[in-house]
Amino acid sequence: MSSAAPRPTGPDHLWSVDEHLEDILATVRPLEPIELQLLDAQGCVLVEDVTVPVSLPPFDNSSMDGYAVRVADVAGASEEYPAVLDVVGDVAAGQAGLLQVGPGQAARIMTGAPLPPGAETVVPVEWTDGGLGEGPVTGMRARALAPEGAEGYVHVYRPAEARAHVRAMGSDVKSGDRALEAGTILGPPQIGLLAAIGRGTVRVRPRPRVVVMSTGSELVQPDEELGSGQIYDSNSFALTAAARDAGAIAYRVGAVADEAETLRSTIEDQLVRADLMVTTGGVSVGAYDVVKEALSYVGDEDEAGSGIDFRRLAMQPGKPQGFGTIGPDHTPLLALPGNPVSSYVSFELFVRPAIRTLMGLDDVHRPRTTATLTAGKALTSPKGRRQFLRGTYADGSVTPVGGAGSHLVAALAQADALIVVPEDVESVEPGTEVEVVLLG
Image (cartoon, rainbow, N blue to C red; front, side):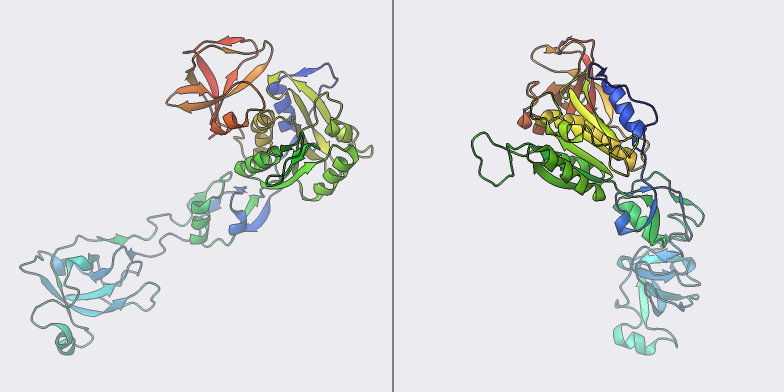
């Protein structure tokens, strides 16, 4: 994967959010299509239209348990004057060699069974005595005295119109119809439809494999005991979950200590199972920014076009970012900041669209809308930065959650939207219409 255009570089270049995203989407390319078994294709994106080879249903069949009859034979039937018909046998689902229903006759029929020749409609069993009611002859005696070929009698207490309770051949889809369009994400209903029309495999773009790792010697895994100066690693869990939510197959590597060589070797080891790599932490200007140290020269001199570019973005949170490609296959790598809110906001703005692009989707972004700001006081924003504040959205209004701090994980957990404050706006009063990114 190579960039479509040269990227601006240099430590003094301040990238806009849009520039950074455009660079990512110009570099990332959809994965090559493959043929997969149906269940393996769940969550994948179709690359071609699927045409129906056989109508659904493939034959006229009953939608009820009851009796297949001729319309004329039950016309005028009532509780007082039921129609009394000879039962000539049973028709079950999957049955071949159907019975013939003639005048004055009925065939017991099960839901899904094909409508037998001669029958014009289906009478639900609730409209009958089930073949056991009182009449000229009933029960075992009825079967014994029935005409040759009959299995007794049934009393029908209501008339039925032609084709009542009959599912017509092709009433779902007809042979030659387009069942699914290219670009469709295959969920359970789509998988069911493919199976119903006889497709055992389908051509799709596979779900991207995303490797997520966090960096920092201070990070401890959940369920372990915290030592002095240590914190639990939440980023790798949140981002792995976010990658799965976006449609990827995500692998969590966990925390890597602040050792450049260790990080570099870990990343190189993970390349074999990655279509996209995501790191979090170590991308700012601190003394222990190991991601920058480890990856600044990974591009490998013999791999033209590879390498990670570390940038400053005109946004808050998430100013420090890294992006480029690594390894022999030019695998895209996004290096996100280490603060929990910064990393998650960065994921939503940059990583999620990259994953959706790898899947081959046309619309790769979260939905956006406008909403009325509901807040106790005006929101402030640094000049020249596009700010993304956490909020809750409902009924056309959005309410800020927590403050602007990039460490506020609890506030992030309550949010279902991002409030966007443009670069040229320093204050937003309550009641103002604002742009909102919907996360839910």
